[in-house]
Amino acid sequence: MLSYRNDVVTDHRCLRLLRVGLLGCGRQGWRRSRAVKANGDSLVVVADTNMALASVLANEMGCEVAADWQRVVVRSDLDVIVVCTPNHLHAPMSIGAMENRKHVLCEKPLATSPEDAEEIVKMGRENELKVKCGFTLRHHPGIQQVRKWFDGGLIGQLNFVRIRYGIGGREGYDREWRAIRKFAGGGQLMDQGVHALDLSRWFLGEISEVFGYTTNYYWKNADVEDNAFFLLRTKTSQVASVHVSWTQWKNLFSFEIYGQDGYCNVEGLGGSYGTEKATLVKRDFEEPFTEEIVSFTGDDGSWLNEWREFTAAIANNREPLGNGYDGLQAVKLAYAIYHSSESGTSVTV
Image (cartoon, rainbow, N blue to C red; front, side, top):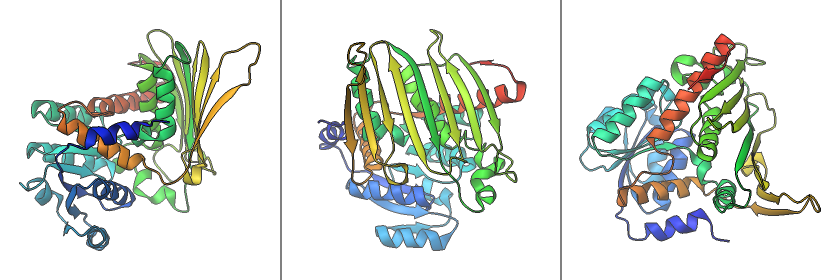
């Protein structure tokens, strides 16, 4: 079976290698660094205010280390800046990088407000630079398989999308930066919820109306939500129904799309989410339970797939998959859901 990654590798063979600076040396920084190195690009420098953390990553990757991100983005020997820091730093770092003529891959959410996200997109457009938001789920093999089935017309016109996505948190989760509004911009809706918003838009198209509810069931000390429930509707009345949760207790990912002629779903993302499986079921009133199931095992290749797609976009001067505009729209939708939750009414987007 031909995967999206195979197509990207073919596209990648003639690309010029890129010189990369990475900001933020936590878990995402490690993942992004490994993808850069695995692709053969040059990881020149990593930066973090925690120099002990940064030094460990720099030693592993054989690159320079820095404490000040502002000294990194001005360097003339870099082509790309990768931003893997807490959310409130995404906008100043991305904008600073583009002011110095660097392409940007920024982790999701693109920013903590629509205004900041809009400024990032504007900077990329005005400076003719590529902006990629870290929507890694688009590059998971199960999602790619479902997209292939959908684009091939196997389930017909799309009717609705249903997503459940959650984790169980950990001891002290409500004291981490993700649970502090001024750093994160919101709770689970701005965390895994942004992925759900992006996948909904990728399959449904633009959203015209939202209705949502956010709450704290368990992490009472946090000033952000630990659960979000919401509906998204298009102008043609297609609907996405979504629940994202920090109180799932056992990690879960479930993505379903239903059309006139059948449905597809993805269950699991590997690791603690369970084996990733994509399923296709055709509408058949005579034999309604015939399924085509594809399982994906082994290491998570989505980080490398996403990096390769981004480098191909730079080389071919095209928009990357999950670009800055997509990141902006996800933040706008999240804010509309917050407004809906506060007002108790649906919100037109």
